[in-house]
Image (cartoon, rainbow, N blue to C red; front, side):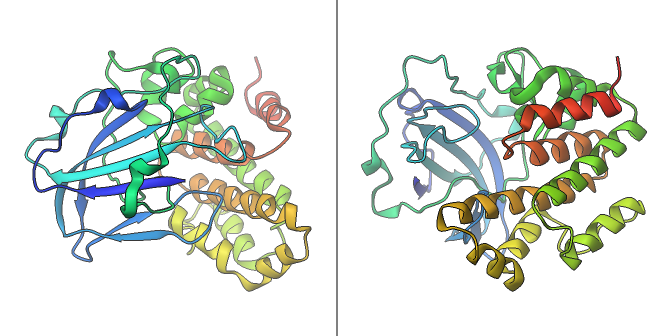
Length: 302
């Protein structure tokens, strides 16, 4: 997709009205001076050189055709990231502008907007701040109604799971920590099995640690590390190479989501572990609703 990265030395001109979605945040660029952009199902992350410092960041997108996934094999959404020196706190950030599938004012994406600075990427992986939604925000990302305190506290992929099944997401968030841990382990095991990764030793090591309730070993110490291991593992590359060309990306996507589920299951917060591991386990599966139904029947009896 088209993405422009633009760094300003002062506040840039205001043009929120030209975009369907706008999210603001505050970001610290470390001394290595790099902004890393990456998105599943994989591929090489793209590194953009940015001077170290604290920045106000504005992420804008438009040209959407579906909510939560591309909605097309050739999506025409366009993105822009603008950075400038942060002179305000996170409390001063404007409310998010969020696109919904019912919007009728979607702009036609202009590929030229990205210009010569464009880079094929989708979302920053170095954004440590995610301000809580205010009552004035658009709650479309939470399934159409305000999030509960439990969902809001869990954060991360909770909104994405709400789009798949809001009632189930709420039930998971309200369940006991022990139940949440059980759901997280089940989701991770299921995702690994369905991705045919059960016989991959480093993956099995992660599963064993999860079952033993100990810290997950590398590369499950971070989503990026786990996803990168999938992409660079020579045995998995050979496995994908033997698949039909049309299925290779699908196979990679399933493997990436599976290790993401396992990594998420090891989160310190049991609610986040359960919600995130469940989302990654079911989102890229043709039997999403069947898997969600299994979680309901196994762990959340009425």
